[in-house]
View 1 (tube, rainbow, N blue to C red):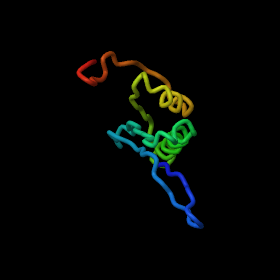
View 2: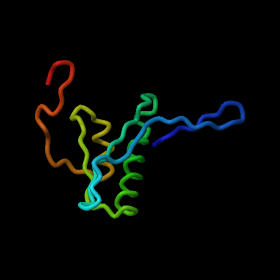
View 3: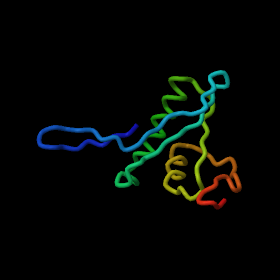
Length: 105
């Protein structure tokens, strides 16, 4: 989870700007799927996604001793793809017609 500090008078507040975590965790196989979302558009392109991915991977590999982390991403999500590649992810394949939106494939 990422948050941004902001000041109001002499107080510092934190604001949540996104979420992240792991899905489909399999402890026996030591695998999981990564999920992350920066929901506050004004916080995009500031490196928060890349930082969050790196922190999550560090925790998963070093603290939980996992072997493999995977994820899925839409091909039009260029910022997400860039963040994942910076963190070390490699493309393994592509799903054709992998999503259904607005009555279209």
